[in-house]
Image (cartoon, rainbow, N blue to C red):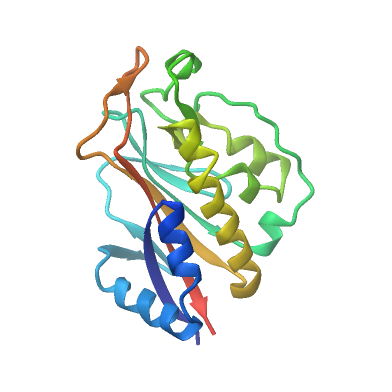
Length: 206
């Protein structure tokens, strides 16, 4: 039987490099220890953080939507090799999420804001089907990120996790923002600019 382990990243390239350079057994011990520090509740075989917000279930991911911040407070999905090895190309059909009752962020909120629409579940993880790829562009699961961060450390972290999923077979991922000490808001819908974006993920260690 596999052992569920968890890790929390502050998404900086320095921390990624530090973790990657750890000896394998040390890395496993480290993430087992961090499991004790993360408040999860169990839903069947999945592990999700607590939420009092609107829960939206799409085909390959779920999210908890915060109307106050006009974005997901967390996004959860299980990543498998099939999802990243598919042949579906990126669509870039950014749009509001029709399943959010109060409405999600709009195109105008990000227009000329200086911030990227940062995917909390990247399109590169949703190549398994056309529907999965299309749903990855709902703005409900995007957060404002500076271009240097979104296209730098965050992109590197996404690539790193994809390389791990080949070895681990599946990884459960939760991504969300830290809204304390927020940096302001953008657009007429006042989308919150987070201070930090984090990723929590669990892998079955053989």
